[in-house]
Image (cartoon, rainbow, N blue to C red; front, side, top):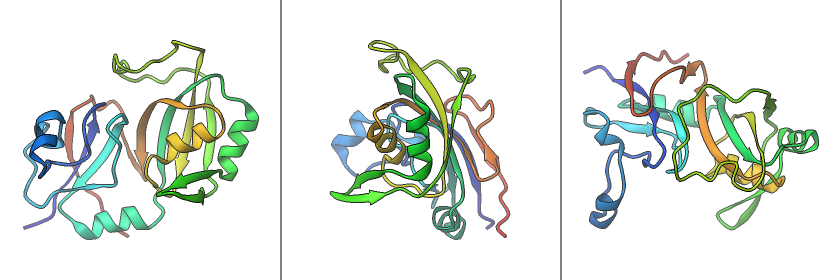
Length: 192
């Protein structure tokens, strides 16, 4: 049977997994299986934390998943930050910053970062996000070729501008575009 691959717009507040073996967690959390009846053997290609949203790929093809996760494919995020980010902070992010990963210090790889001058056209933020409550917010685009746990959030916090909202908009050549939160599309990806 041929492998199947899907792109979806993971909503805020949902875990990047199909289900949980933990009965207590299953009662309190939302899982991707509520969005679509995915075939057996489907796995998430990378993850987005519960409070992040946007493009997530799922596939039944382990080789494809491994290739995307291990080969330095670009992943672009739009991050809404607490405060008006400075040019100096953008330069620091682009060159790489020190963050903590599993209790150890880690220097992030250089990446592409730029300020978004206009607020991006996205669905409204979840009501629990505290956007603009304390000081003005700003938006950046940040494109990584690695994906450590909560990396973008840790990076922006390290330069003094914590992430309020995080949306992944691109993985390689696959774009979120106008896919609505919770929507799922079947796609075809050809490996090189």
